[in-house]
Image (cartoon, rainbow, N blue to C red; front, side):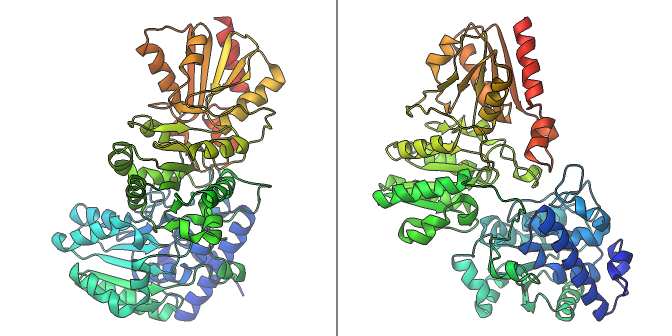
Length: 565
């Protein structure tokens, strides 16, 4: 039997399918997703759970004119396969291939570039207010996005707009980890769900079996033809159709076929924090629906009384941590760099202005591969450096992460510890004691060029090059704020290269330049190598570093050019 999917190049091609053909098509899409993701990696369980849901939406609506907003964007694989990208699906998340999230430049069917949670309803409100008259605006809300407060701010606005809005809740009881809190309980209790939505002026329809195409088509047809705003509550199974993903949906949320040996920074942080928390009852581990991703699952499983999961609510996590700290606790908030952006105000207003003893464990800082632009952690240094009382530390390896966590237990001020997704390659023979602002000389040969390397990835690059050619000194610039003024003063007559996995504006290199300017000092030459955000895309770490000029060849050329001056 020939595959139906072979003849599907746009959603228009499925409009004439009968129910049995739509079911066959769904099975073929699920098979393609499994084949590609199990080989190359990607978001697996979330996409397996929305196959029938996506097919039914495209069968009922015309999203070349209507708009489909995917929230969270990682549930877009079936959507991409149906909208003309199936032949390139094997290039998913690879450099030059298709993105793992919606991307407007790829297709007219991608309404917005979405990679973070809880944004869909606000985007829909904007589209309803301007530029989409007569279009059906549909938000597909899934993977715990209903625990994010922005959703409810938007729902509150729907009634005032006075135009029809459709929300489909992909209710699978999961964020990345298991959903927590009152919202999750509401969505399980159908009688209690209706009334809150009515208060927003939105009709409620549900619950619908998210894997029954006939029921889904009936519900979406009703929504399409209705004159009123409507929320459809659809129950799906994350990982549907793949037994391992059904059993362990969190494990297969973001799947990689190549497993790194040993600890990651996140898993090492969780283990160390568990040790510290067992010795100090003031220490609490806090996550915003990312216990597994950030390494805090070990604290959750072994010391639940000192673990807090607030759902996808970073603003609440940090503001709550501030309240705990002013009450005498020692909270540690583990969060991805790109998700910390949501809580900018809480960092300034609640943590730093109150000089709270809150420690941020910032995972996925710097380059992040296949997830693309929405998940790059290249902005945190720029905004954290501006904040009163904030101390910033970037460890060069796992042992230094252990050391700074141990040191942090006695540090009673705001502290950000940032580290990458990737495990460092270089093995360091020495580790100097952590002292506030003190950097560490890794190579001190009296050369006229000094490399100030910020973080594990940049120290790896500098050390790897030094082993091959020498001819320059290296400083592990582990404290980004405050900086080591003693070393900066000593090297003022040297030629300096700064390395960082952050954008240039406001970053580490900018901080070094600002120091010399503020002291009226002139250094002979300085090169600030930072992330070129125009080059960011979905690619491997090595390709991203190459695109941004972080190769041994490029660094060696910079050193040679400085030596000639």
